[in-house]
Amino acid sequence: MSSSSQTRSASWMPAVSLSIVGLVILMMGSPASGMDVLVTHHLNALNGTLVKLSCTFTSCYKVDHAKFAMNWTYKESSNATDEEEEMFMTYKHRMTTVKTARFGDRVLFAGNLDKNDVSVTISDIQLSDNGIYNCYVRNPPDRQQGHGAINLSVLTELPPPRDSTIAVAIGASVGGILALLILSMVVVKCIRRKQKQEPLSDEQKTDEEGKTDGEGGAEEGTNLMMQPEATQKV
Image (tube, rainbow, N blue to C red; front, top):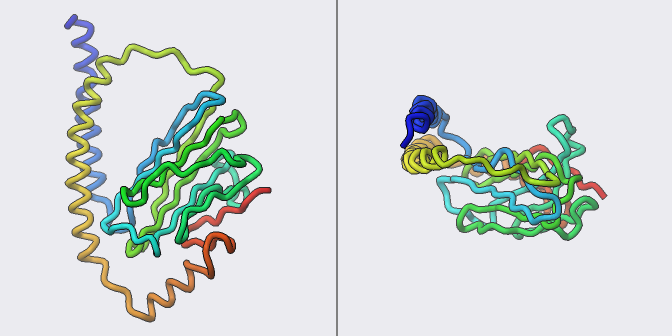
């Protein structure tokens, strides 16, 4: 390896070490409540192609299809109001694609609930599809919903690839370490959460169900247990 390559590699190490330490501190210090939703926060897509919006989640509890709830929504920018947020995919007892003027029939579910995966695909992506895609997840008995946001940029051409051999090599090594750290932290978090989360009384359950579940399924207005409530644009 040349001296310049060694210098570049060495310059990565302090940042990598700080990232690992920061992640450990963040996860150890996070409260044992709610779930974690994992998404790619910034995503580039080529105009006219099929794009997968990946959204997975970690939970201390197995998915109960009768209680699980999920929404995918779209808004043009972070400044858009709740009223301007469009729902295009939802789950309440069953997976339902909400047809909108923007997406039509271009959206398909591409995940697997049993694997904590609620990803979707959008075909023939358009420049007008630029914006923020929100993935909301609720998996009782976890009491707090999870949320992940993807900022999608649709490009007319992709930028030329850059030589990132060193970055890839370091990233692969760090990725293995982070995976082990995340797994151990999730286990610890689940143990703490189950210890602290006492069962709800019958009266509390009735109270919560009245506030969050609403009446009926997705076909009756999709009254899910998550905020904000997106409005469907026609």
